[in-house]
Length: 501
Image (cartoon, rainbow, N blue to C red; front, side):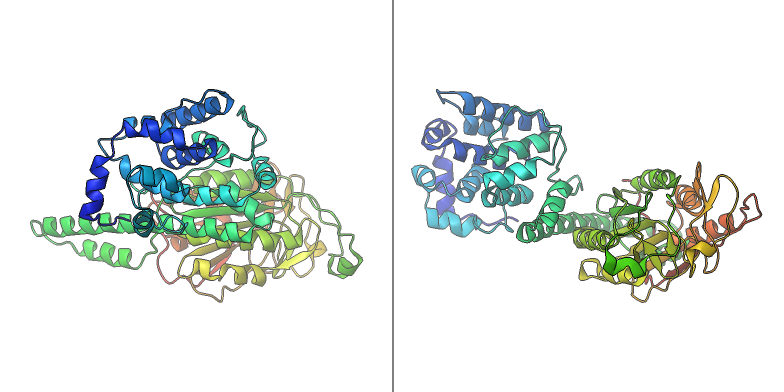
C-alpha cells in the first residue's frame, strides 16, 4: 500500500542523512535493535539476512556495543529508499524518542503508517509485521515452546526473549518463508499455524491465516493485472490474423475454469491410515467393526506417489499418518481454515472403511458426510475442493472376499457431494472391494497419479477421471478380481491443475 507524502514531511525526510543513523543507534536498547533489524533485514536477500543475524549475535555477546546496523541497512539500500522503511519500523516498535530526534512528529508518523495495526503495512513487509506482533505477544516460555518445533537447530543463541533472532534464523534456512508478491511466491508459515492451532493460540492462529490470505490475494490480483495486459496484447495481435473457431472454444473454457495459481494452489492433505488398533474406551465399543482391522501394507507407496504427483502442480503436501477418529475431523477442519489463503484444497484419505465411512486408526468410524460438511466452510467458498477416498465402503468389512498373496482389499463405495464446487472421488463402487497391492500400492491411486502426470497439463480433472476409470476397469487380480472407480461432482467450472510458470 502506498501513501501520498505531504510536502512538509518530504522536506523533513531530505534533512535526514545516513550519517545521522550512527548517532541515532546509540539511543536504542538492544531489544529495539533486534526488532528493527528483524523488520528491516527480514525481507532482504539471504546473505543480508544471515549478515544481520550474525551482527545481532555479536552485539548480544559484546560488552562494548558500537554497532551500526541501521547504517548498514541504509548502505545496502538503493539511494534514499531506506528512509521510509526505517521510519515505519521505528513507529512499529514505538521508538518515539528516536523519531523525535530525527526531527519528525510522532502523531504525523502514526497517522501516516498506522504502526499499531498489524494488518496494515506500507514500507515494511506485511508478514514481517505480523511476525513482530507474534514476538511481542508470546512470553519467553511460550516462545521456547514454539522454538522446540525446530529440533535440529544449530543456532548458538539461547535467549527466547529475543524471538525475532530465531525467526531470522528460520527465514535464512527456509523453515518459514515470508513470501514475495513480485515473484508470485506465497508465504509459508505452516509451522507457526500448526503450533498456534494445537496450543490454543486462536487469536494468533486467526491473525496469521488472515495475513497469509491477504498476501496471496495480492499475488492473485497482480496475476490478474498481468493476465489482463496479456489479453489486451493478444486482442491487438488477433486483428492481424484470421480468427479460428478453436480460439473461441479456448476463450470460453478459460472463462468457465477455476483460477488456480501454481504458487497459491494450496494443500494436498494426505491422511494415511496404515496401522490400526482397537479403541479401549467402553463408551465407543459399540462402534467397533466386528473384525479387527489389519494394517494396510503398501499404503506408503500411494502416499509417496500422491506427494510427487501433486507437487508437480504446486500443491504443498501435508501427511498425517494413523489418526484417531476425532483427529481426522480436527485435522481436516484445520487445513480447511488454512485454505482461506489458497485457491483450492485436495484431501486424500487412505484407510479401511464401510458404507459411507472411513476408519480412524483406533477402528472408530468417521462419516464421510461429516468430512464433506467440513469442506463447505466459508474458507473454501467458490473454490474447488477434492476429496479422494481410497477405502472399503462395504456394509460389513469382514464380508470382503479374500484374494491371494500380495493383493488385499480396501473396499467399495460412492458418496454424493451435495455442495457446490466439490468433487468426491472413490476408489470403487458400492459393494465391491478396492484392490491394494502390498508392493505396488492401490490400483486406483497409482492409476490416478499416472493419468494426472500424463494429462494434467492439458485436460480438466473430470476427463482425467474418465481415463482413470477406463484404466482401472481393465485391471484384473490373480483371482480375476476387478473394480470400478466412481466420482460425484458439483463443480461449477472446468477444473484444470495449475501449470508451473
